[in-house]
Length: 327
Image (tube, rainbow, N blue to C red; front, side, top):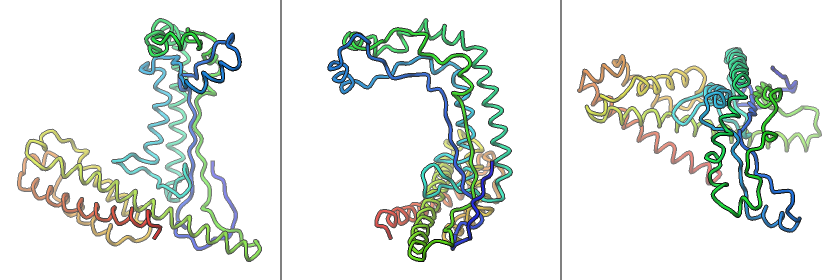
């Protein structure tokens, strides 16, 4: 699972981090609509330029079909987060690659293995119900592909009818679903390069680290802003608080905990101060019920979160400005 790159350490702001990449593949349940074989070459070329059509093979609401991909997405969201939640990893300058603190490697690996087991179980369940899934799709095929069947021109040029051979074989389903996690040491510049090449590579690496730093800071600012803004909204009125759940408080608290443990990569004092303000504001709040019962405390938390959110908005604007102008 872990692959080491044995190179001498260069000046690296991410010395306590490793790089990870996650690759996922799954059966989409659709294919590109095929042209009818009797069409002449000139017509085929013209039609391909005019139409980009997909043919739906299964009902995407089918729980057996949805389950394997859902398991993959669950692990992915847990690993890298979503707009309102932090994941275990941070973005890096290379697309599809993330930063992972060394202390989390074992935890990530164990969770990955557990997720692979769940995916396998979901695929096995899909295989058990595969014949029934195709039978259901055949019954509903016209509805699933209503746009294809509604246009006589499309039917003239494309094979829109149900075709058993367009489905993966039963034995192929296992290979259609896969997820791979790679963990490697942080990038460094080899020391035995010619001096001029080594200098160029070190500068490129420095720029990559700086870009990664900016991406991490912006991501932290935006996610902290999102969960603080949500709590500010939830505490804005006594009516709003009634409909609120504990997640509105749990999310900013979790952010603060994770930030202090492994996410304050560059000792960002301004962001640290806002995290401390958030913690202090929520210190007397056990859960949302506390705020529902104490209106003065609710109003104070709302005011605090609103101020923190405004500060974060200003920091985000500055961060994006630096990125845009290349400062």
